Image 1 (cartoon, rainbow, N blue to C red):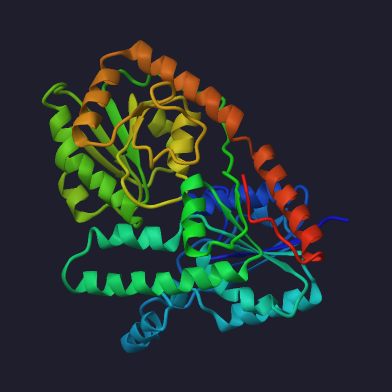
Image 2: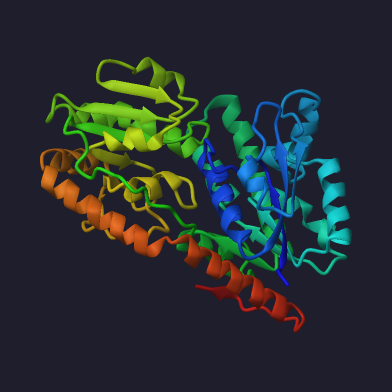
Length: 410
């Protein structure tokens, strides 16, 4: 008999998602459903799409619920009061009484073996399982405290005060949710250490997500000196990285190579990004075919300096055989080695030097891109990822009855 797994998601998993979190959810769900009976409850705002039909067909059931509106219908003072009471704004905007009731109904009627909250905010529904036999698993895609710290760095004035209040709320909320989970799944060793710093008794499993390799790719790129960064610019670490490229890295690079084309791909570009658009600075917005954009890329860059989790864009770049210049944070969780699979850089000058080096050497970037593609193919197989989830579920279901859990697992 297949295990029954109930996934709780803050947005619709999709195979064609426009941001990394939904894409990872879609792929994880697709593969989990091959070996488990999977039910999905997810929140959806008015303008967001439902789960795509191909994923729904793989599920035992999939149900959507309207997200509580972040702006209308909630008095500002209520939101502030919630933050002061240890409930960050994202937690409040994903709190639905109807969703909670449905979780409780399914726990009673369907009796899932595993109740899995995707993202920390969905851990607020764990109390529904306190009287059930379901084992609670929390998947920390990106620790909330790390995400809010990156936003603080870009705020000023009154907004910074509000963001600091959110940080304090996350420091209260996140450890509380961790304590309610029988196990916590993270994608990187850095996130494992962060979780254990918040709750040392947590049972933590590091399970990087997988990636799929395209059949066709071009490691050498277009030869037009195209430098690319990809991100959804609602996410503050991506804003920080893109603006760093525009303000310092790109101006430094064109001093050495004048005909460099900078390509910033992704939804919701900031005003600063849009105002920088020009002949050699392309602000594309959402790209429906990321493979086409990466095909012309000569060097993929990721000057990320904040946030947590694994980056889907990095897995995609390596899978497409691209030569990459990145910070150590950007490649966290990926099976790649500096100077073999990518060129490491932390400072602006290091980025300029590394990018210029690769742009001037087509053979080096082609060879490096091919090595990285092979490394990602070997180390990020979805079959290995799902096998680890199987191992986790078996471990929890066997040890729960014994009342014991191992503290951490590699």
